[in-house]
Image 1: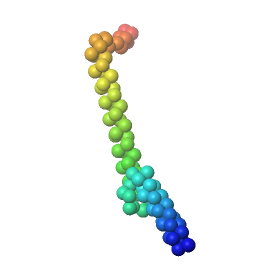
Image 2: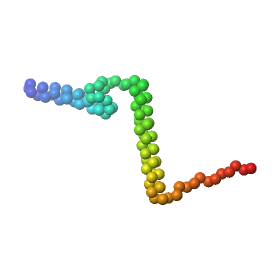
Image 3: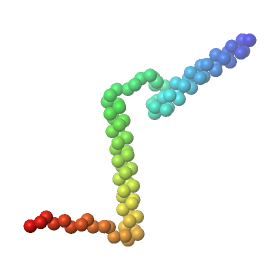
Length: 87
């Protein structure tokens, strides 16, 4: 009976620690940090800015690769129509 109690206690403690560590890993925080800490407004702004810069860099990289492929295929780039104002 004592062994079953200790196994149940260990299981409960293991589940709680696993939830704590898993939640922090899911939020990309240090493992031993407080999972209920929301962070400051500055941290949120900083994280959003970093994501924006990263995504814009990816878009620029993809567009550069598309231009390289287009020049390698020797396709002429379409020129915009010449619109002259009336005189």
